[in-house]
Each structure stands twice: as structure tokens, then as C-alpha cells.
Image 1: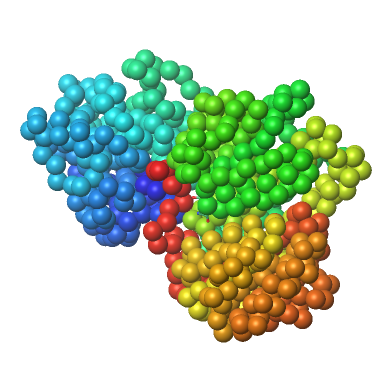
Image 2: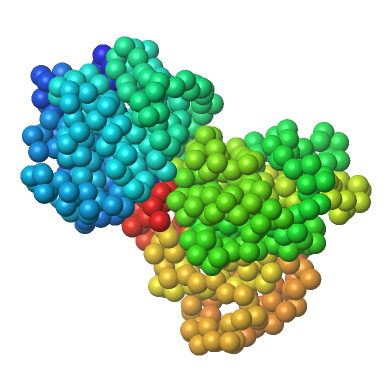
Length: 609
Ligand code: AGP
């Protein structure tokens, strides 16, 4: 997704803008640019390519400027090119703007403005913004931006500068995140918190419909041109936690952070004697809970895969029907959602457009919506009725890892909490389950110690073909889906996941000699069936890598390599089983020289539909 930074204060703006854009690189982008005001002139430098290209173009120039905006673009309308890069300007080059989101009515606005003599040079939707502000500009940038946004349909986080008001930034936000950083006589805009941590931890999260004006003297936020007061939040993350911490890639760091992230997510939510789960953020009382007739879980990508695990756990323990839907499909199927539905939306970023739209549709239909998200103050967290945060810290790598396992933890916590509230488990059974769950983080550390070197060797030796298959039954199938997504999205190997019992209905035709097949075998009740499926695959000479618990004898006898997991309750096996799959994907991608943290075509937060 696009990244935005803005600065106004007494320091040189260019180094701050470039550094801020670098911290946003993880969002995925194809071009970058900046605009500063120097000697009351708007000066713009922008180009297709990485930020290093922009840095070379800037060189030592623009060093006097103390006010400016920067942007990394992830192309939506118009291919990556210098002309389509942001910032864009008005006719006279006196107003420059950057934008994240999609202006859905940009073509009609372009026609309206062209009829008034405005000329456009790019293919982007964004370029209508500075021309529209120019159309309304009467020596008041704040008023012009406030008026212009009334004509927009779609989503936007946009920041404007103008040479006639040289020490001022004006921003507006709708459906796309924008954050204000409060420094000492200096103020910032950024798409997300990580771009601000070098300078301040005091932030204000803008809401839809708000316009903000920053100058070296201070900030003011408006709604319909009326000043409003907003709470300042202090971010607990520090700049270091948003860095690589000695790892080669963010992804490897975040895989290894999972024990810590899980402990952070469990902290304060399990009774000291393990007798129960505490979730004060869940607002339904027992009477309201008893009216719930089904649970619907909606998410995208890895978060959707987490939802599938939630389904298995909740149906098994709560005996409630649970539907899991891909967010981009959910609201177009006229979903059967009403006030008897408990809706869970899962989103690491809390900004995924499809998931946000599903949340709004569910609320409109009367459901009680609970968000499971990792970003404090994200749009989804602020629009849901309840929020269960996964305290995993910033997840920078595009491939989601610690967010997934902490989402599972949140789903397990919610399931055990509801089990107690709905009387679905005896006290001793619940306590035993919580005891098992509480030991999961340390078991992940055991996996790193016992298997990581073996996993690296398997990845380098056996994941060289252009195809790979992941198979499993029940929860193992849901984990297989996540494992295949990890592998395909960072190594570009065409990986597919199948229910183990489904292969013989077609996909077995693709199983040829040497093709790697990951067979997950953690669900003990189904192990015999899974082994039968493995034998079907082995009969076609595939190279099979089995995942099972230490001490299991039957799996190593039928596979080529076995990755052993510490023994645990089958219900919690997904958190352990996914860790080797994350590592396999990581080492396979490294072996293939791929851009692990920023894979091609992908973005960390997809804030467009
Ligand atoms: C996962 O590795 C991907 N980065 C992607 O599928 C991601 O999970 C999806 O875009 C949903 O993002 P969210 O959790 O921020 O909503």
C-alpha cells in the first residue's frame, strides 16, 4: 500500500521525509517522491523505483526546506512511472499533494476540471486532488481542502502543501489511515506509527471526515471546518522494536518473536490459577450471549486462515455453528447476518478495505462485531463493538507470521472464555485446557532449538521445484492452507493446499516423482486416514515431508523427512505446526534469492478493494 509522511518544524525536512519513507517500505511500493517548500516555491522530486533512486536524485539539494511531504506509491490507477508518482500538483505548481486510497469518482472530477481548463499529465486518480483544491483555493489551504473533499467518493488519506502558505501541512482522511505525530515544535503526518517512532511516541489517530492543519506553532483538527479536540495516545512500541534486531530479514525476526508475542497476548488474560480466561474487552453479558445463534468469522489471507482454525475450535467446544468467509466475498452474498450473530473480524493491520467493509455490513445488519487486530487505533479497531488486541508488536514483513499465531491465541482465548460463560466445559476440563495452552510459547522455542537447522536443509534441498503441495485433515488442512500461502507469497513456488482426503478426486494427477508434499499429521483421531493418503501420494514417488509429534512412530515410516513437534493438545497444534512451515517458506525464499520482506506485487496492508 502507499505510504505517506509529512513534516513541518524547524529541522531540515528532506532527511526526515526520506527516513520516514524508508520505514514504510515494508508496505510495498513501486515509486517514491517528495515535495518541499523552499524560498516559497514548491519543489518536487519523484521517480519510479526504490527510495534509493529518490535519494540519489535529491542529493544535497533542498537542504533549507523545513516543510514537506513524501510518498511511496503502490500502483492502483496507472502503471508505475515517474509521471504517475506522487506528489501531484495543480496547474501552476503551487499546490502539491500525496494520497493513499482510491478516488472512485476521479473520472467525472477530471472531466469537470478539464472543462474548466485544468490540464492533467498522469493516469492516476490522485492527480484530480491538487486541481480540485486549486479550484476552491482562495488564499486558505485549509478551507480549500475542506471544501474539495466534499466532492470526493472513495477512500483517501491525503496531505497538501502550498507555496502561498509555506509552513503549513493540511491533511484529510476517509477509510485510509493517517496519523499525526506530536513533537517539540515540530509535527508529522504518517500512514502508520512506525514512520514516527524515531521522532515521537505521542500520536493522534485521525478519524474519517477530519481535516488537520499542522504548522511549527501547533496543530488543529477540524470537522466541517469546526475545531475539535482529540485524545493524544502514547505509543508503547519503541523505534528498536520496529527494526530488524540483528536478523537478516524482518520475517525471520518476527517468526522468532512468536513466543514473546504469544506471551504478550496472553498477559493478564488468564487467571493466575489457570481456572479461567479474562476478556473484559468482550462486552456481551451471559444473557446477551445466550441469544447468539451463530458465529461468523470474516477476514482476508492469513487472517482468514486463522479464522478457519477458530471455526474448528469454537464448533468443537462451544457447539455453535461457525461460518468463515473471505471478506471480499462476504458482503456480496447477501449474508444471513442479524442480531443473533456474533461476528469476528480478524485483521493484523486493522485497515484491510474488504474486512472493514464486511464489518460495516455486519453492523448494518445488527450483528455484534468483535475485532481481533494488532494495530492500536486502527480503523477496524475503532469501528468494531469490541476489540481483542493481539499484542504482537509491529509486524513489518509482508508475510504475516506472529500476527497469525497471536490471532490463533486470541481465538482460543475467546473460545475458552465463551465456554466458561456458556457453561460448555467443566471447571477441571477448562483448567486442564488452559494449562496446555499456557505452555505453547515455550514449545515454539523448542522447535527453533530442535528443528530449525533441519528445516533450513530441507528447504534448500527439497523445495526447488516450481510446485509444492500441503495436505492435512481437519485443523491440519487449515494450517496447510496457511503454509502454502507463506511458501507461494515469498518464494513464488506454486504451492497448493488440499484436504488430504481430497487429493484422489483430481489433484493426485499432479503428483509426480520428486514433487515436494508437506503432510501435516497432528490430529491423532485422523492419523490412520492421513497415513493412507500419504501412502497414495508416496505411490507416485513424491518427496514427502511429514510433520508430527515427537514419539509418533507411524509417520516416519511412510515419509521421506519428518519434522517432529513437541507433544501438545491437538486443539493447539496449529500454533506449533505453522512454525516449521513459516521457516520452510523463509529458507526456500532465501535460497531462491527472493525479496523476503517485500515480495513482488504484494503490500502489507491492502487498503483498497
Ligand atoms: C499474509 O502473509 C499476507 N500478507 C496477507 O494475506 C494478509 O494476511 C491479508 O492481506 C490480510 O491482512 P490483514 O490481516 O492486515 O487484514
